[in-house]
Image 1 (cartoon, rainbow, N blue to C red):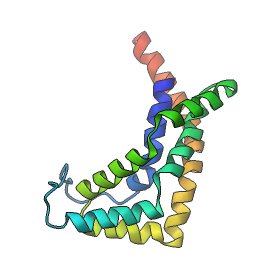
Image 2: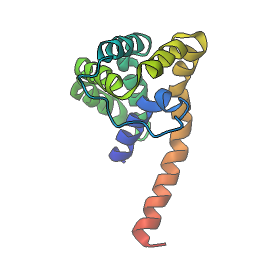
Image 3: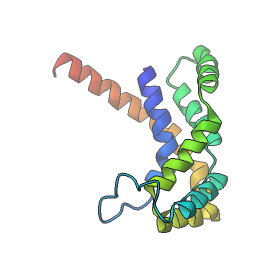
Length: 152
């Protein structure tokens, strides 16, 4: 169950990015750090993080993940997770990852969309979406685990 909570936590963090339209061609794994447009990528990734900071997304994801624990264990789970998460490092790593993975046009579109009223609304609702979907995912994953373990 704890692994499921961590999977949900990570999936919640990526929901807004995953909602972006899929490219026609597979994306390159990463852009070399010495790329000539890396400064521009980093600047746009930083703008994206001003619009969509990591900390509130982690907190929303923790709330969703905590739902998989008995009520009396939820506060301790969230407190332990908060203590273990290095938010400043996570933000730096997230900016670096965005700059390496996304192109300047992709980052600009993300900034444009998530900076818009509609994009902000989508971002604000992703926690509710994840929370609504979590019980369905938990039930399906529990059933799948039973089937795998019993060979049915």
